[in-house]
Length: 275
Image (cartoon, rainbow, N blue to C red; front, side, top):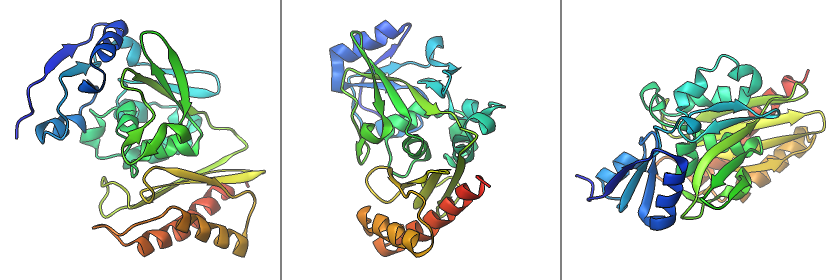
């Protein structure tokens, strides 16, 4: 199929992007990498009046160190972030998850913020943002706001972004030496969306586990210092609270069992990093 007709705007400035979003709102779509949007256009699942190309704005192609966080601009490609030599040191959880995002070919075009905007509940980058308690930076021509990842993802491919807002950047908290990190996922093939994915942040005072691929958005829970049978019981409660459902890739029972097993493995791996 071919896309429905639309106007194309190659933005020359942020103010031009903001003006177009303010004018057309929900009838506008922002394009960066286009790895998700272009197939949706071709299948006419998306029918915007105007397509706003932001890939030529240098201010959106920056990865900046903001003290305790890494700020990733809206036009930064996934491969560019993965290739940063200091990523494994400054953001080990993100470095562990990025190789599971699609394939090398899609990472060379897809953007970090594009994955966040699409908000697929099985996607790795939104999961890492939730696990790390990261934030999303949204801007319009009149205001700018920061939203915590746990509040930004509101449901299946649904976010808290207003129609006139641009996802300008996302911020990943940097690693702390006193913390341990672990990531793992299970899918039918490498590069497929995860059936279940787990990301854990552990410290001496507690453990935070985030799970993707089960609920309609990535979800995190704090497990404190629970161990043994108490941890098993808490993981069992978490697995049921995620409200898994049967689909073509697995039954709800199958996903719950993966949450229990992979969740424990992820927690144990992150805690071993504290030793």
